[in-house]
Image (cartoon, helix red, strand yellow):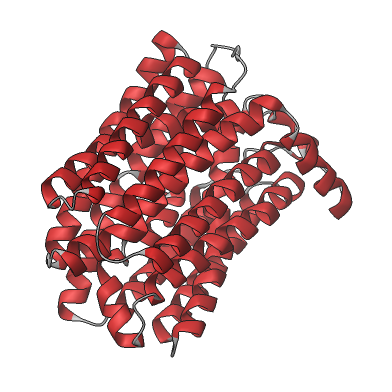
Length: 398
């Protein structure tokens, strides 16, 4: 039985499900100072963010293999049920350790919403067609980074930061209903794999040995780590150091998210005209230049305006590199797209966990630690991009 056709509502629904990731991170960024005060620990927010990224890294390895074996729909439902209950646990936590544990559990469930929709895209399309579908997903998903910090800021202004996780649990409930009611399974039973734990590990090793996968995945991994360093550091910089209100910080974050959406929607046009390889290369250089500017600002103790300019420029790299790197990494793995997508996500969020912990340990409220971390990640992305093989895609849409 062939997979379902790409209907008008399918990108909307998949984008809503993938958005559970940014909702779970971006909505509580404005609450970082409040969380630090509540737990009497300046590193508590970054520890919780790192625990979340570790959970995503671990969870995606499991979710990818499960979705290749059981289909896409059932693991997606189970994962988001876990996410919903763990978010309630975050709202009720009593110390830094319990908060980190519930964040990790939430990420283990949320990982289904991150990895499986990507695999569903690969079930349905490849090459430019997949890039176009990914960009549609990113357009929907891009609303979350704009709205989430504003919603989190509003919640913190009239209630405890714990209410943010009550809202996240409600998001989980809506996501579960939408999957149960509207989402078809894109992986027919005939294409599902029936293999055990050891063969799954062998498969991951085999995927990693494929040059197109590992080079594109590392490009995306370093780019994601660059983004996560920015996520972890900017609340300290703008709210803690410069004294901005949570609403002003949410506005800045929303502006950068709008830039990300705009750049992301350029991606299909640029890929169709120039190819995935040149788009990744040029965008990686732009990201490196933007991060070099942020490093210079940190070294010379610049004010908020040059930092804002550097972050805005870096969004071009995020918006163009990440979807193209996803397509390149998954291009030769249709037979086990779930596993390849899981490995890709695991690499990205492992980098995110390291970046988040680094900002928790090294962050001092200035832009210098962030600039160093982002510049180092941008260098890594450019080196990985330079090692990619040339790919040839089919151009027909599914």
